[in-house]
Length: 155
Image (cartoon, rainbow, N blue to C red):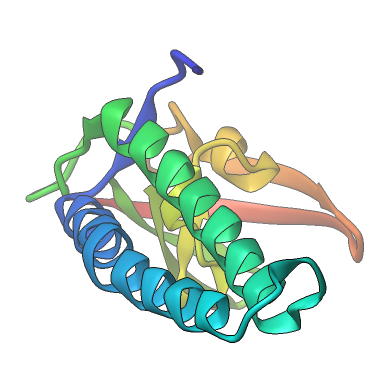
């Protein structure tokens, strides 16, 4: 098992806890019922329903192990209140890109969702922002070319 810290917000930890509970209780029971029904059909060596249910069981158990690793290595990050001096995991920052402004929250990789402004601290852009102060600029190489950001605020 990995010893790497998994940065999570309170909301992210709650989401993982709920999903883990669902997979261990509801989903395991559903899959167990499918296996039981498939066994009743007879010869399991050529029983597609049985093999499909066993595959589902394997995928469910793999997902449980993955979530347990995240949960066991979770380090809770506080959502910033007020202005901070430099960008760190858990901060929400406002940045200027050309003539537009955007807001990003720096989160752990398991919560990242760039389309919602949730940027992983391990991504190139997240790493570039870490440690920066208000007024500092960051350049990030993207598939579209070099993008320059200016940090306007940190919360």
